[in-house]
Length: 273
Image 1 (cartoon, rainbow, N blue to C red):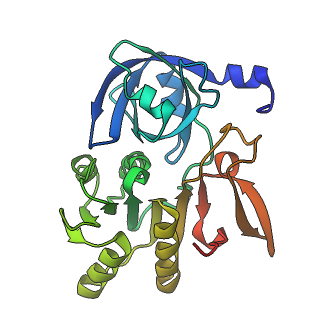
Image 2 (cartoon, rainbow, N blue to C red):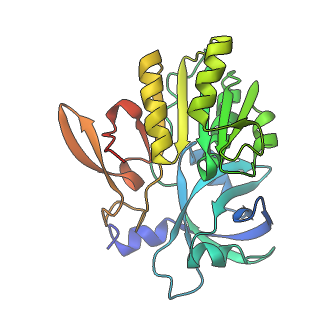
């Protein structure tokens, strides 16, 4: 059981769907409003997620979704339809009730972000949480640069452009922007313009994060990564999302949902893929 039933129930809130739109073929953005947003605005940190609970009682586990941003009195979540739960979510309409948890997990550490330059690197549905992060960096006087990677059709690029000095886009099929992946694009940009950053933040597929971690280590750029692991309970009880983290000279098993999803890249034990 996830800690205890009473604690989990206290962490749940109910909102209303304010709207929903399809961003690409299988990627949707849902906007949620409700009285809970005052607490969310005060407590939520970039990189955290919420558990969304389905109406279909046969769907036992909630669906963890990263917080994209809290904007104009609405919580925005962006997700990809991959199974029964997210398929149900894609059918929600304006006015439907939706039950979700309070913000969960450990977000990005911004304690050292008072000045300097920042690089945001996202891949696919790892991009949404970087939008909230870009907004927070703006509040701190930092206009980051973003490098975004997609298989084909991009999304959230215009929203990111409003918060960043520069946004570069890579698509694997070459249909938009640079033909290739984000690390190749960063290397190309660096060779041409001497790209550098005081700190970097990333969320996306693990192979992308590992390649970026290698590049940032070579360039001595501190990097925080948000790991995408399949979660079960979302509260740290089931250990279904455990990863290996290097701390105090030892390999420790940590739950992505509770101890992460954000870790320093140098801590992550990158198993061979």
